[in-house]
Image (cartoon, rainbow, N blue to C red; front, side):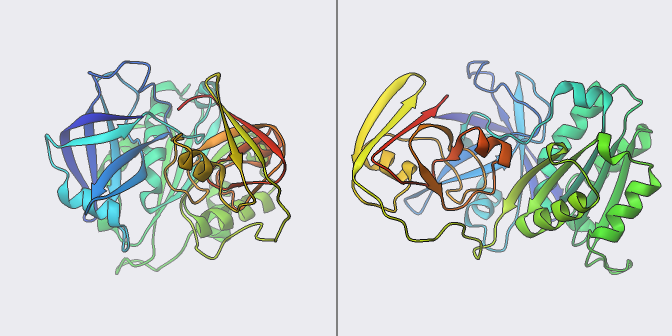
Length: 348
């Protein structure tokens, strides 16, 4: 479900990004109950074609407004359209918040946090950093390693520097690959290890946040796991994926059968034939619109739980091994494998 919201402010955050603020006071308070790190989906019509895209919330939870950031992309049809066309008083269609990229309150209060982000990956982490400042015991620290091409393309640069000057338990490390006056260096093993050692970070008792493109997330996860960071202390969100990644393309035998989808205790039942179509596609063909955004296995908007039967996920870049073990699936990537499948979604 989407809600028409009015844009009440537009702020330029870098030469290629803006932050948009929406008034949420006319929407029921339970809808926009935000956890720092989550995102909203935006539905827009461009040349008579509908698009849905996800954008991370970069503001603290409140009942007045929400803010989200958009960065210009080389092939970002929707992002670039919104940057060029959204102005103050524009009306946009916005979903409720989604996402699993967040931390429990007790972590903010007592544990050290290290965030590794690139580009627009800063948007959810900026919200989480502000929440840390509000809830920290002041004895724990927040270290941010933030990569960009240039200073001019760095979102929230001035706000971050102000925070660093004001708070002694916040440590910022800016990394640039195309800045003229600095040696180009990507965020890699040597840099990460150096910063962890410099700040005497106890790896076993620290939470790590990773946000950016798929290649960066994969590389950073491998580095941190090589340093024996426990899997349960790694939280990540992928903003872009490689078109080359495609899991589980093997041919499988499929049969005709029944797909049941339980949405908030309302049961929908559909017949299906031998097909490579996903649960999301089968539901849509039968008039049931399930939540979705990327359709690429990245954002987790379409997450459900497998109650009975067997599926194959073609791609999964959003759910952890633990979540998959508990039966969680991405409906946009789940192909049916048997005669009877039942899936539960807690909300639309």
